[in-house]
Image 1: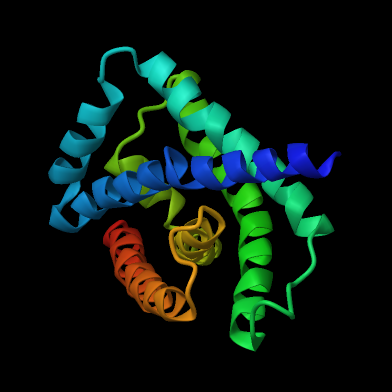
Image 2: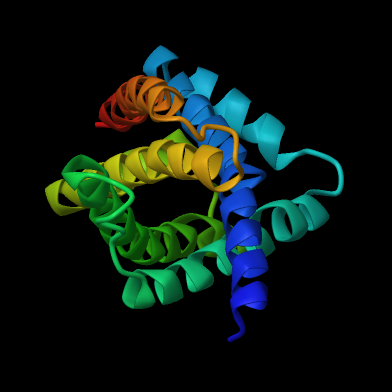
Length: 202
């Protein structure tokens, strides 16, 4: 792959990770958090999203296609990229490594989650509070979903930091340090929401 082409593919990969994939992940966790208010609140929020007009179009062109590109190209990056020790310090290179590890975990987790929910819905199973409570009645699934949620929130938060750098928004060391603090806070807040939603189904 030529350097110019790879540059644009990486830019597209970065952009899709934030818009629309990152926005969808955030919205998905916020909807799931409604489970903390009970089964009826979750079913109402989930039902509203499931009854949006042009849902098939929205799912494929706003979620699945961007997600698949981001995931598959991300796996390619994970197994071909090397840390930039000259530009970034030890902390950032650890973040670089964790970004790749969580990306691989998410490919597995999302594929399984889609199988347990969207594919089951296509086969006639109702996707509601009871379905998720049944899935999470297994302690192994609780641990698996917790790992998936934390991987997703970290990957998104750290991905925002990388996006800001690669798109030239945060170029100075000071701006990158500020972005680090903001994205870490975002990671913690979104993780609390995600894990809180998970525990609400148990």
